[in-house]
Image 1 (cartoon, rainbow, N blue to C red):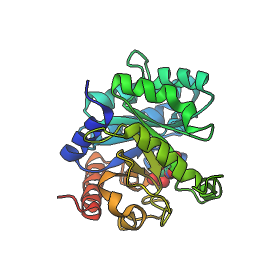
Image 2 (image 1 turned 135 degrees about the horizontal axis):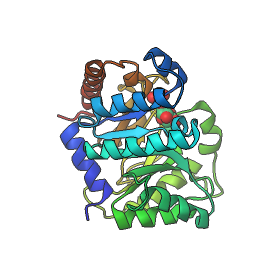
Image 3 (image 1 turned 120 degrees about the vertical axis):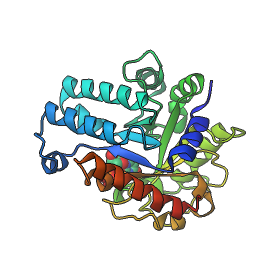
Image 4 (image 1 turned 90 degrees about the horizontal axis):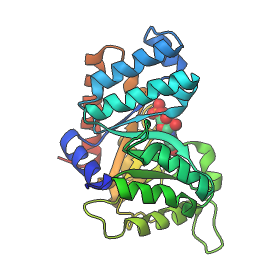
Length: 278
Ligand SMILES: O=c1ccn([C@@H]2O[C@H](COP(=O)(O)O)[C@@H](O)[C@H]2O)c(=O)[nH]1
């Protein structure tokens, strides 16, 4: 079975280095002329699926915007995930889960077990109960070709006070997360399946990313103020592993599918140039 790292590597080569988020904010629903209800949510997600599902390497639904509508919203999320995968996009569910290991096992089953209705290619996870507590996710991901993106240096300004704090051995919290991921990815080719989330807004990371051997998801581009040009400052020699992630910046071009496609194409071109990919 092909690993998530290998599938991601291929998807980026074929479709370009871009992850587009599905974040149906109330303001975006209004801008698209949709009601702030389950029907509006369904139409919004369907438009993104039809416009970008066969074009973009990775699509990242933000679970919160679906959960907002309870079980009906979750049903829309399930069908959105299914449709995106049918169109060949890798689905990264942004759900930022984390808990004690025995509960993480249940989250892992929910998202990374192929028999689950919510099965996706990868999820985001929070390491603040210890990276080791996420082991059930790492294990199920390895078993079924899935991936996990662990928060390391998040794009929001509040994250630094925790993530840049120094631990007893002198490393920052973010560096300890990176180091534990690096161990999990050691020896994987062409790329490990455990990624880190490092915001494009964070400036110099102060972290050594050189041993990561896994994907670096970079949110914070566009609406949060970072530009593709900032990626060089943040990631330096690790640029080839970066997966730039945009939500509102691309979604703002909708609801016209052609305009959404054009926005995604422009963004891929910017990212290719910034990452120096041909
Ligand atoms: O550090 C992080 C981790 C996750 N996110 C998520 O990405 C999108 C960003 O949306 P934009 O519209 O491009 O700002 C959103 O779903 C966040 O929850 C992040 O921003 N930063």
